[in-house]
Amino acid sequence: MQEKKYLISDRKNYPITAWASDDQPREKLLRKNPESLSDSELLAILINCGYKEKSAVDLAREVLESCNYDLHELSNRSVHELKKIKGIGEARAVTIAASLELARRRQAAVPRKKKTILCSSDAVNLLQAEYSHFENEKCAVVYLNQANQVKHWMLLSEGGITSTIVDVRIIIKKALELGAVKLILCHNHPSGSLEPSRADKTITSRIKEACSLLDLELLDHIIVSSGGYFSFAEQGLL
Image 1 (cartoon, rainbow, N blue to C red):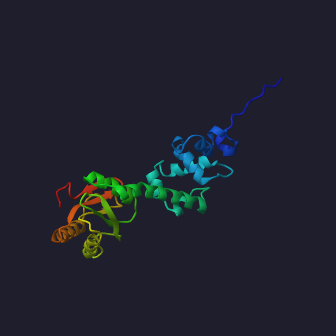
Image 2: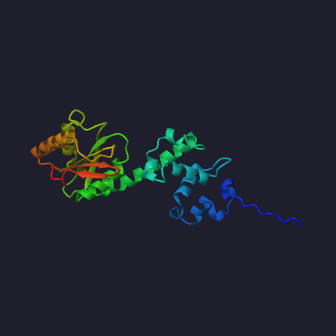
Image 3: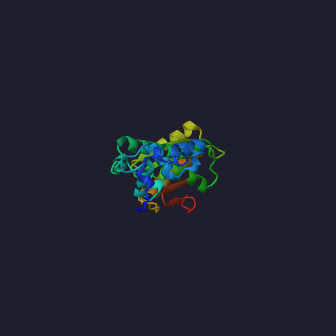
């Protein structure tokens, strides 16, 4: 009698519906909780379904592999870049991009409402969540009350920080309208460099001078990037 050989099949070639229910991402989330799922399983739920050669989980792994399994790097991918991955069409790319943007906003929204800033690290935690990932330069001001609680957040400019782009009068006017007494200036360096430019130092000096004339206090100017931060106050530049 001829011996029967058993073939070993790779599960990744089977659709998720053919997996054991314990292994299916949606069912796993329903039975347990989102924290119990891996990044690829969560991403597979967004992708929804794979194609003939790959399951949604395998497609999710390929997406993560394309950015070295770094969610921060993935959040910087455009819809156009995501669509370059086989199996990721426009609808899936938009879903992934929207979900990551929502996660970023959620991270920044809670501290923005209730945050009390008592030191530079408090400010950095707030600002890095909001600005460190952008690929273009943005400048903003955080307005605080006497108790150092955040009252308001205003985007000043995009594309650079110079005296021609950042209007000191608008910054001061908004502070008076809000009844704010303290300010923190912030901008990001997409290049990753944390060295303040001459323009950074000039605008900081102008804002500090304007604040002092109206009994306002510029607490800090913070530069953030994905690699860290630079605090004018910590470096004795205020």
